[in-house]
Image 1: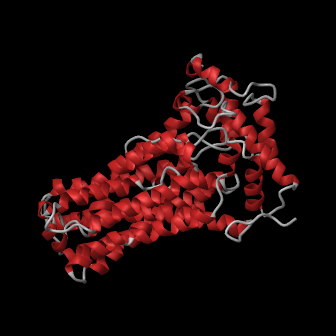
Image 2: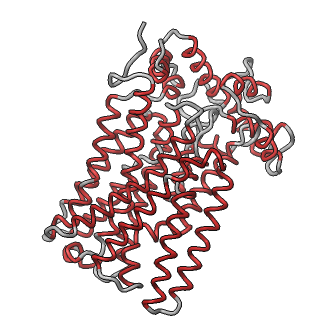
Length: 489
C-alpha cells in the first residue's frame, strides 16, 4: 500500500508545503506590520485622510488600531479555535483579512473615509492567523525540527516588513491612488496563498485524534512521514499523540477549558504560559514597533530628511532586519534560547542608549548618531528577540492550543494556546517538580542541564516514570486536579 497523499504530496514534500503555507502566513503578518510606515505620511494618503496630516496622534491611532483587531482575533481563536480546527481557522482568518483589505482600499472622499479605513484596519487585524499557524505547524512537524521551523517563521516576519517597505517605496513613484491603495491591496496575495494551500493540505493529526477521528488521523501521520498507514512508525506516532492527549488530563474532551492554563503540578501549565506571555510582552514593549512602524517618520521629523530619502533608508533598515533575522536560524540550537535572550537584551538596551543620547542635542549632526543606534537596535532585535518568543510559547506535547493563543493575545494584548506534543521540556518540568521544584526553585534549570537528548520512545518512557500519565488513570483525572486547586502544588 502506498503512503497517503495530500495535494499530491507525501513525506518531506508535504511537510515543505505545510511549512511554505505557514511561512506565508507569517510573511503576511510582517507585511501588515510594515506597510503603513511608508504611506502614513505620504501626501496622497494625507490628502484623502486630512486628519492624519502632521498629526502624530492620529497617525499612531490609524496604525495601532490593527493590533486591537489582532487581539480580538486571538480571543476568538482562544474561544472557538479548538472547535473550528486548524484548517478552518486559517481559512476563515485569511478570508476575514481579505475583507478588511477590501474595506480599506475602497475608501472614497465622498463618504467618511477615515472611519471606513479604521474599520478596515481593525477587521484586517482580526483575520491575522499568528495564534493558529504556529500551533498547526508544530502539530504537523517532527519534534527534531519543530523549534527551528517556528524560529524560521518568526524570522520571516522581518522579510514581510522588508517587502512592505520596498513596495511602499516603489509605489511612491506612482499616481496618488496607487501610492497607498496598491501596497495595502497586495496583502491579498499572501492571504490567497494561505487559503488555497489550506483547502488541500491536511488537518492537524493531533486535532483529529483528539476528536476520535483515528482513521483520518493515521492517514495524516502516514502522509507526513511518507510511510504506509499500517506501518509500525504510524502506530507509534499515533500512540505518542494519544499519550500526550491523555497526559494533558483532557482525553475524551473536544475542547480544553480555559482554567487548564492556570494549573501547575508536573505539567506546569501556568509557568509555561507565563514564559510565553512574558516573552511576547517584552518583545513588544522593547521598542521594536517604534522602529518598524515609524522609522521613516523618525528620519523625517527628527533627522530632517526628505520623504523619499526616509523611505529609502527605511528600506535599507529592513534589509538589515531581514539579514539578522536569519542569524538565529543557524545558531539557536548551538547557543540556546537563554543566551540569545540575554545578548539581545543587552544589544537593544545599548542601541537605545545611543539613540536617546544622540537626540538630546537636537542637532541634525547628532541625530545621525541616533540613526546608527536604530540600525543597531533592529539588528539586535532581529537576531534574538524577534523569533525567540515564538519558541518560548511553542506548545509542548501535553499542552493544547491555548498557550499559543495566550502568547499571541498578549502580543496584541493578551493571547492563549495550551501546548501540543510531549517533548523534552515536558520531562524537564515533570522531573523538576518531582525533585521538589514546586512553584519556584532551580530544580527545573538543573533538570534541563542534566537531561540528555531523548528519542520519542525515551520521552514516552520518561513521561510514565515521572507520572505525566499512567495507563490506569481516568481520562478526566486532570480535570479533578484542577477542581481541587492543583495550582497550589
